[in-house]
Amino acid sequence: MAGRLPDESDFRTRPGKRGSRPRTKTRPDHDDAVSGLVTGVDRGRYTLLIDEDGPDEHTISAMKARELTRQRAVCGDRVDVVGDTSGDEGSLARIVRITERSTVLRRTADDTDPYERIVVANADQLVIVTALADPEPRTRMIDRCVVAAYDAGMDVLLCLTKADLASPDALRDLYEPIGVSVVTTSQDADGRITPLETVRAALAGRTSVFVGHSGVGKSTLVNALVPGARRTTGVVNDVTGRGRQTSTSAVALRLPEHEGSRGWVIDTPGVRSFGLAHVQTENLLTAFDDLADVADGCPRGCTHLEGSPDCELDAWTEGSEDEPTRAARLARVDSFRRLLAARS
Image 1 (cartoon, rainbow, N blue to C red):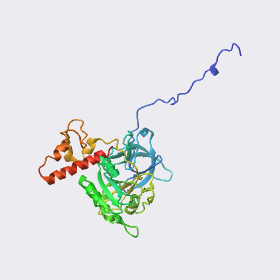
Image 2: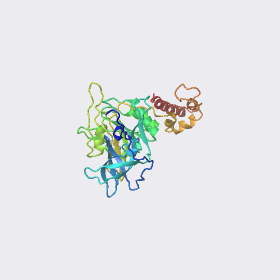
Image 3: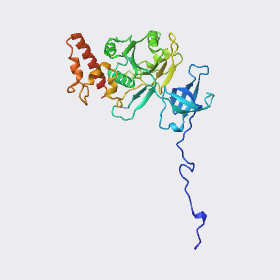
Image 4: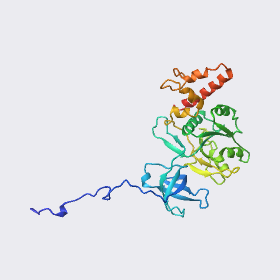
């Protein structure tokens, strides 16, 4: 209507996108939270073990609380949860805190990717499962896993499977001098893994994370170590010589008691690459205490690789008149440089 004066129907106010409720940085203390161990992660849902080894031990399902949006809980994490922690069907708790981690095993997609992916937390031993044949062992991949473990401050156990098909001597000679423990297993005519007790002894009382290419027998070994694990196993492709990935997510499994000690194994999906963009030379040197002391005298910016100008590692190698000592030092430096070169 011409000449009509505006009234309240002519005005529109757009509500704020975040609502009118005032924001606050104050967060609840969650003093009533209970502790749990993350044993599995599946599409945003976490399986937790509550009251581990206690009279009320049980598993629950949980999701992350909103305040943890930028933090990612992984298998092996110790977390605090609130809400329905009964474990009853349909119940769902909330993870409100991730406690400080003792170790973090990381990898990147490749050596140029700046984004670190946390594989597992709070493991103290990396078990690299490698077949001696079918598929053939890949020492470069083993080297990269060793580097990642040393960077995380973890011990390394090299488990060589299918020893009935090839000798483990060459790999044993290559890795034992750099502090890697080595065990071997075979599979008998009935499909049993032997000697399983040797592996059990190396895992007892520890939290160990298993990594390895698909088809090397990792899931078969886990199934033998943990009755009822039911990890899916695969076969090696006759054309490519590679296995098909069968496990799709990491899962923590409790080991049976061995000589009074128990432990955990964390089985991870088969990997085809292990990027090391996050690893610094200084971190790798900490695994070689003797070389770290020598490298303190190197010029600033020394890469410690072969041919580096004025690298003290070369002087240390030639600094002994005793031939056996010189040979031992040379082998030590060569091993370190081999691992260092694996980063690129």
